[in-house]
Image (cartoon, rainbow, N blue to C red; front, side):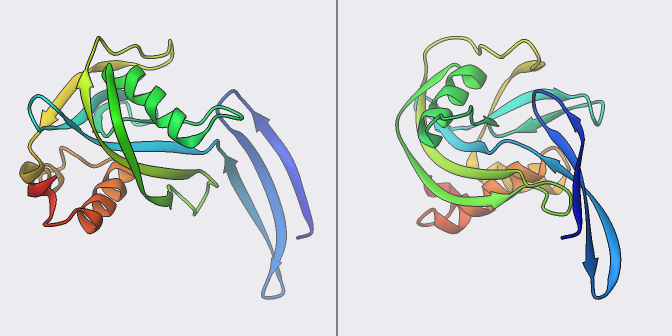
Length: 178
């Protein structure tokens, strides 16, 4: 590495410019430094449906469907962060959650790293999003319907797609037996 310069900092990311030689040619890379996050593939005890959050994403000016997810606070244990996010986004508690994998969400420009969990929860109250989060409710989806949501573009959030792929690969008998 030749040089790294901090260009911008906010409460949820920093942008750094890194300069280094790549095969003898000086290259410049702008990198988003982001906190680690958690993602939950959760089923609702009462219905068996998978929990998706309807959330407005200002960067794309659209509302998306996503599995509950959020950043890990500094010093926070990853499992505690997942339980907190489930409570904030879905108004749920979970008895047991299991880590099924870890992913980089967008390694071509960011160092954001996600830990994916699977679990079953109970609705205990309303969603309690932070002031910046623009939620528009929950959707419960049968596991067998997720493939059609992906095919028709209803579910296209990359971190949710990666979480679903991990879930499918680790769930005995596939999603129908979740």
